[in-house]
Amino acid sequence: MSIIEVRGLSKTFSTKENTVEALRDIDLDIEAGDIYGIIGMSGAGKSTLVRCLNYLETPTQGTVVVEGNDLGKLTDKQLRDLRSSIGMIFQSFNLLMQRTVIDNVCFPLIIHGTGRAEARKKAMTLLETVGLSDKAAAYPAQLSGGQRQRVAIARALACDPKILLCDEATSALDPQTTQSILDLLRTINRDTGITIVIITHQMSVVREICNHVAIVENGSIVEKGLVEDIFTHPKSRAARQLIIEGKDPDEWESAQDAPAKADAHTVPILHEDRKIRIVFSSNSSFEPVIANMILTFHEPVNILKADTKDVNGVARGEMILGLPGDRELQDRMIAHLKERGLAVEEVE
Image (cartoon, rainbow, N blue to C red; front, top):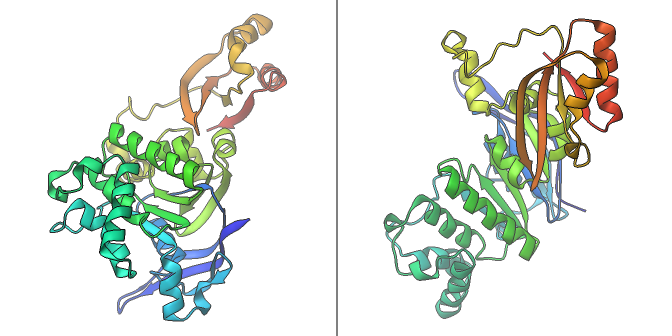
């Protein structure tokens, strides 16, 4: 059952100089209890989209339905009440720097009329959940980036939301801290059933934690589905660049802007006439598939790239192969690989 339904959503920003169409005809369904990723480069529209999900930005057209409520038809008071069931965390943490950690977590509870003693009791429970009960009396300036984000998560959970929106929540953190925050979010999702929507430009974050993903490019969703399916068979240009070339959107954006500066070691030039990408299933990973294929056809292949990626907790191997020049032999090799359960697709 969908907890969030988006239909025909568009958002246009107008100034005296020009008009910017930030979002175009977005359709989205997010199931209750899911961890859903929305990924795109800077300026793609993903942060505008997440702000439309709780009507911090009002769509120019289209509908957003949360828990059966059409947000566009709610009064201001009804909208404020519904927002209490939607928590949100940000890249910049947005903590109150002059208040202690426990006071930051208490803040939304006090606003909603919870008594101070009850608010502090609940805040301490939440700080235990995020592993910061010993920092209750500290101030945000005394904490690391990862600890500040944990406080922000505890604060976002204070009013028992059913949805948690995470807008680039890990992009300011180092890889080790990012991993710890993702582990925490996964645990919270498992223990509470809360629906988590993650806005990010990092494909590694989507692979690590998300079940479904939507890829946003130039204000439109160009591909969406199960993370595993899109990893195995990326169809859109954006998905193929993210997955096959292994570049996060901000990296390939800068590469497009300045191709002359591209490092040959960073962006390899592949000279083979026909190249294929193969993804190993759990069964095929136990068989020396490439070695057996070479023995079968008595022709070498060139391994241009090989890697293993963690896709939602499951290791998935991938390779890009350069095939021999004979077209008939190429087709036979591809058929051979598919017969052994590998996902095979041609790449440019």
